[in-house]
Amino acid sequence: MKKLAIPFLAILLSSCYSTPNIPGFDQEVWMVPITYCDQSKLELAKVLIDNKDQLLGEGQTQIKQLLGMPSEQELYRRTEKFFYYNLTPGDTCDIQTIRRLSIRFDALDRAKEIMIIE
View 1 (tube, helix red, strand yellow):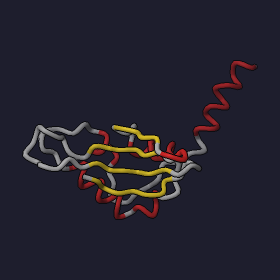
View 2 (cartoon, one colour):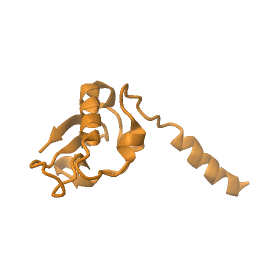
View 3 (cartoon, rainbow, N blue to C red):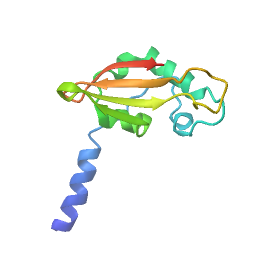
């Protein structure tokens, strides 16, 4: 009986987190790695910025379910945390500016700020 309790508890707890539904956001396209000069992630990031009210207040788990693992994470002062998602391929294209989606989480694990940074 104890062998069944742990998987059941894990399923029960993971079902408590629902992925935010963002109109116009294509999660399958977002999950594809950036290829040479591809701008699709930048366009999808703009959709996220336009609908940021639906993302603000969400926890890290919900953001990871929607966007996957971040390219980088930064632990800031007072237990604030930043997730960074690369939007441009970097040196492999004529694009001069590296852009990333930045999501700031407060000490209570809630998204407080979402922006595109250079």
